[in-house]
Structures are given as structure tokens and as C-alpha cells.
Image (spheres, each protein chain N blue to C red):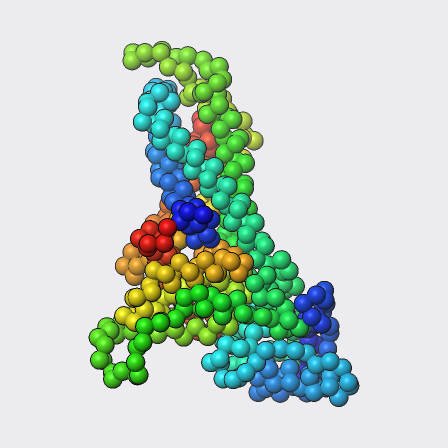
Amino acid sequence: MSWVTKTFSSTLGRKLLMALTGLFLIIFLIGHVSGNMLLFKGDGGQAFNEYADFMTTNQLVKALSYLTYISIIAHVVYAIILSVVNKKARPVGYAEVKASSNSSWNSRNMGVLGTIILIFIVVHLQNFWAQMHWGSIPMVTYESGEYRDLYAVVNLAFSNIGLVILYVVAMAFLGFHLNHGFASAFQTLGLNHKKYTPAIKFIGSAFSILVPALFASMPIYIYFSSLN
Amino acid sequence: MNLTLKVWRQKNNADKGSFNNYTLTGISEDMSFLEMLDVLNEELSEKNEDPVHFDHDCREGICGMCSLYINGKPHGPQQTTTCQLHMRSFKDGDTIVIEPWRASAFPVVKDLVVDRGAFDRIIQAGGYVSVNTGGVPDANEIPIPKRIADEAFDAATCIGCGACVAACKNASAMLFTSAKISQLAMLPQGQVERKERAEQMVAQMDAEGFGACTNTGACSAECPKGISLTNIARMNREYFSAVASSENV
């Protein structure tokens, strides 16, 4: 075994991949939530549709999107491998465990939270991403040219209360996952410092509330707009 | 005080094992937990029954020999070693559940005794200094800043009891291994084998079948010596920089 494969099949190497892909997906979330804020612009969706067009045609974005797919897949695959290793490390469990006295619920259930988020991602990709890539989307014309009207697809989707609830609940799970994952990734990378760790923990907590809340506000806003 | 004990009994590693209930009466709250078990074993011996086997040695909280998973926590309700746990931490009429450490790397030998040889093998893999450091040097002969000396000493207070493994949901030995890597990585005597040590100890830890770290912090919260999670971050730094820069292809 070469030193590279040896490193990435060690528990620490696998954790390193979890941390790096996790942090990359955190950066992806920043981009994703910022772009989608255009839904609130109130211009009938022109800015959002132009942005969606840019995101599906720009070559640099395309390269980044492949990096995102790889990150999601690697994050999931390594999570499964690590979970199997971790399960094998304790074949016989305890009759009584007071886990809540020494650790937080979300830190112990990252796999469960991650699985729920993965299911959400599949549903979410089917709702919009697959439509944009392979579905038939009505066209809309602005001064700058003709665009696929993803804004209309989003509006139609979120006039369904069931889907709105699903998205909001999924964002709550994402929040819990990020709440532990953000600071945990830095700890795994060994980036622990008296000065910066408290700041990382604070930013992680703020991020885990703010970003899912912004995401969740979009379907809620669109649903209530659709009632008028 | 009167107590009901629910104790894990297992003849040997091949045996499946099960809980046995025992009732104890007239236990003083000033007794240590192990003394309470001594009382139980005396009663069992008088009845010609097999006494409950459990590990213990110094009974002063410094050797790391005692273990026991008591009422869902390693070393019981206090953040201390089982030998330093006293019956005043329990109430009259309590049921106390006593289990061995649970980890595939810590096979049960008998009853509550587990084989913690895996820890010894991790130490053998690199937890030593093979340069001759001579006799005890005079104080301050080797200049080490107080902060570094304190941090290395804090890591060195790990007694290797295995509570971290027992507490971890993944039965991970990272707190132990990281403390043992840290205590040498921070001192001048540990520099010669610094990279090899990190690589080999982590490899041995994996080979023993311990799980990975999820950063839940349960290990540190239950550690009788309060070993900090910063050691795990340091181990990760040590390991990643070692594999990236060592000559071991």
C-alpha cells in the first residue's frame, strides 16, 4: 500500500476527507443561499432566472458543480465506511447508557441527520435541478434575451404546502448537522487554537442557524405570496 | 444503605454472559465503590459462589487499573476513577448497573475484567523515547517554557484506564492515543521520533479495531484526569504533517 492509500484508509485520513468535503459543502451553501436570495427581489423573477441561466452555462461554475457532486458523494461514502468501522468497534453494546450527560444529541447522531439531509437532497434535485437540466421549462423573454423560467417552477412548487413543510423541516435537520459539523471539521483538521477556536465555534453556531433559516424563509415567503 | 446490584457475569471470553442481581444491605456511604464490591464478594465467597471479578490495584486514583461502567457512565456518576468513587454518590434503595468496558479492542476476560493490552501495544508502537536522556536532569537545565511543560504534563496525566474508549459511542481510543503522542511531541526529548511516533501509534490504534472520532466530547467529559480534546486536534496535526513529510513511502 502506498503512503497515500494508507493515509486515506486510516481513521484519521478518512476523518480528514469528511472534514474537507464538509467544509467545501459549507462554502457551497454560502453561494447557494446568496444566489437564491434573488427570489426575494420582487422583480418577477428576472434576476433569479438570469442567475439560474448563468449557473447552468458558465464553465467555471460547471467545474465547481462537479466538485460539489464529488464532495457530496465522498462525504456520504466515507460516512458509511466510518459508520461501519465505528459499529464494529463496539459489537456488544451497554445495557444502560447516559450519553446525554456527556455529549450533545446532534454530535451523536450526525449519521442520522446526514441520511435525512441526503434524502432531502435527492428530492430537492428532482424538484429543480433535474427540471433545469432535463425537464421542460417554460421560456420567458427579457431585454437581455430568452431564459428558462425557473422562477415560475419554484413558485409553482412552493404553492404546495406539503413541499413547503418538507423543505422547512429538512432545513431544521441541516441546522443541527451544521451545528456540530462546522466546528468539528476544524477540530479534525487539527486547527485548534486558544484564540480562534471560540470564534470558530461562535461562527459555526451562527452559521447553523442563519443559513438554514434563510433557506427555509424562501418556500415560506413564496407560499404566502402565492395565497394572494 | 441497601442496594440492588445488577452485575454483568461472564465466565470467559467465549461465554455469552448475562446480568445477575444481588442485594446488599448495611452498606456505609463512606465506603468506596470497590469496598462495596469487596463486601459483595465476601458474601459470595461465604456462600461458596464465584466472586465478581473486577480490576483494581492502587485504589488511589493513580494507576488506571480500575474500570467498570456504572449506571451508564464509565467510572460512575462522578468524573473520577471507580476506586475514588464513594457510596455517598448513591442513594439508599438504588439499583446500580455494573458493566465491563465495551469495545472489540477490549475483549472481556471474565465478568467485569477486560483485556486492555491494546493500549500497551499502542504505546509499544511509538509511545517512548529511545534516545538516552541520562539521569534526572537538574531543574531548568533543558529550557522548556512553563506553558509547554504544563501542557505536556496535562497530557501525561493520562493513566490509560480506557474510560475514553468506554464513553465513546464509537469505542474510539483517540483521546488516549492523542495524549500519549502529545506528551512527547511537545518536549525536546520527543523530537527525534516525532513523525514515526505519530504514524505508528495511529496505525496501531486502527489495527486494534478502535473506532474513529466524531468529536462528541464524551471521552473528555468522562476522563478521570480531564484530558482535553485539544490533544486530539494536536494528534491530527502531528499525524497529517508526519505522513506528508516523513520519508516512509
